[in-house]
Length: 175
Length: 95
Image (tube, rainbow over all chains, first blue to last red; front, side, top):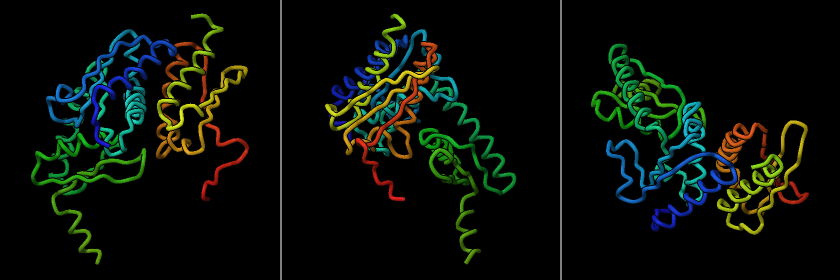
């Protein structure tokens, strides 16, 4: 379901966050941007609603690889009734976590690309969220000689980078 | 906020989040059960909404538990979440 009413969606997310700050006593401030203004200037995220969190408890959000941030993001996406494949339209951020993580992934992609070229073998990344996998796939778009795919199920799903045509060659040899 | 108010607030916190997730908010009930070291929040929703609060691969339930965990840490008291299936009748799991 596309987000057809940004202000209604933003209000629902604001109500959810207010529940956490009042009843949950989390000291968080938030700013919600929806529509064109929410777009990621780096083009790494497909977001249409951007929620920036700050305040004394914002540090909790980015601990353990941003687990709490991702949980808030997931519940918010469900509250505004996004289909699973549309969850990327909502992005929660704190202390510039998303941009920093994007930079880390870009560096990891560069290192992996160098290794795949040197060895001619596939390179498997650690399991990560669908958003982070997407960022990796995007980072590899710049390398015309390499390809990526995802492997594994659920929480264990990870990105694999390999030389262009590698998978096809293996498929053929299997027959 | 006093210590006595907290379980009530947590009960309401889970109620509010669950109501936002389901199609039948009026059917949402949350009961707080005090244990020695923690408080169990037992969430009950309409049978058709159970999947909505659990989510694909349990992701929504896990997210709610992570949120409760953060709130627990702030309050130095552990809150856990139980999601109950419809009154007495256990839902067929298909296994």
